[in-house]
Length: 98
Image (cartoon, rainbow, N blue to C red; front, side):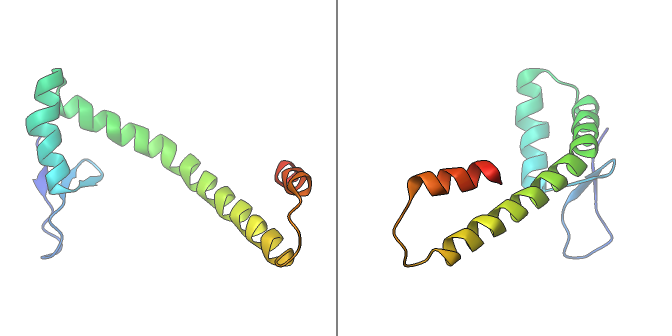
């Protein structure tokens, strides 16, 4: 499977392989250096990447949302205690609770 240059936008130079839009430098490296060096078929590789991204993108999105929620709680905890003496036990308890 050869990638086609995306023609939809004059400024978008990414390559299209299946549903993937790939940076041209990365695409060139993968197809001309990486895959020949490890003996993996180009079509099989990109199909595998597409499958992995399709399956894991929703999981990753949820994890990132959780990370944002946790960071907001941590930020709030610190703001509420600004200027107060540090209590390591209290902080560890808070982190375990969230």
